[in-house]
Image 1 (cartoon, helix red, strand yellow):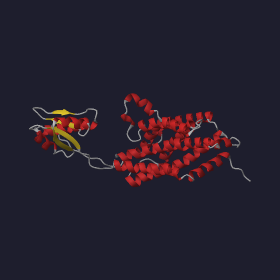
Image 2: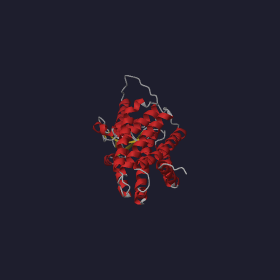
Image 3: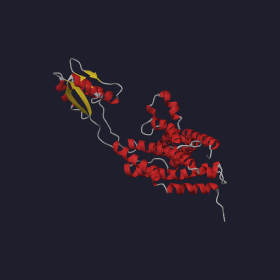
Image 4: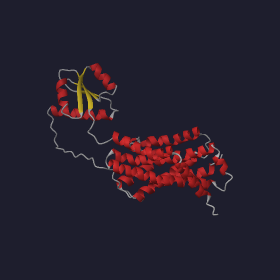
Length: 344
C-alpha cells in the first residue's frame, strides 16, 4: 500500500476540518461580502448632505437666511445667542453667523465640515453684497467607477480578510489543537514541524484563491467596480499577502497555550493595522512623522499594492518595494515560528 507524505495527509486533514465547521465558512467567505454590502450602501452615490447653519437673532437675520437658502446644501435657521452657542458646542450646527455692520463667523476649525461651510456661507453672502468674480469657472462632476468610495473600499476589505484569515484561521486553530492535545500526539508521527507549518500555509492559500475571486466578483456585479489589472497580478499580490499573514499567524501561535493568550497577541498585532493601514480610509491621513512606520507595516503595503493593481492596472514590477516589505514580514515570521514552535 502506498504511503502518502505527512505533508499531504495534514493538508487533507485541514480541508476536512474546514468543511465540518460551517461557522468558519461564514467568517471566511460570508462576512467580507456582508461588510462590503453594508459599507457600500452607507456610502452609496447620493446627493450631498445638507449642513445646518445658525444665524443669530438680529434685524438682518432674515435677509441672511434668505440669501443662504439659495445654496441647496445649506440649511439656515434663526436662533437666539444661547441656543446658537449650545448648538455649535454639541455639533448640531457647523457654523454660527453673527450679523451686524460686519459678519462674524463662529466655528470649530478642527471640524472639516465647519471649514467648508464657512467658505460656502462667506461666498454666498459676499455675492449677495455685490461681489463679482473676475474669473468665470465651470464644474464637471465625476462619478465614474474607479473614483468612488466603494472602489477604494473593496481592495481594503480584501487585504483585511487576507490578514484575518491568515492570523485567526491559523493561529486560533493551532492553539485549539494544542489545548486538545492533538499536537502532542503528532510528536509520535513522522511529521516534522516544517511539514505541519507548510500544510497550514498550503491550505490557507487554497482558501485565499476562493476569497479573492468571490470578493472581486461581488464588487463587479453588485457595485460595477472596474478591475483594471490582470487576474494573475491580483492573485500574485494576494499570494504574497496570504503567505505573510499565515507566517505571522504561525509565529503568534507558536507557543501560546490558551485561547485568551493567542487572542490577545493577535489583537495586539492586528488592531494597529486595522486603524492605520488604509482599510476604510487612506493611510496618508495620518501625520507625516508616523508615515515611515505606517508604510513599513505589511497590511499597508498589501492594501496599497492591491489598489494599484486592481484600480490602476499597475504591473507587479512597479509594486516590487511593497511586495518586498510583505515578503520580508512573512519570511521572518515563518523562520521564527519554525524555530520557536512547540507541540505542547
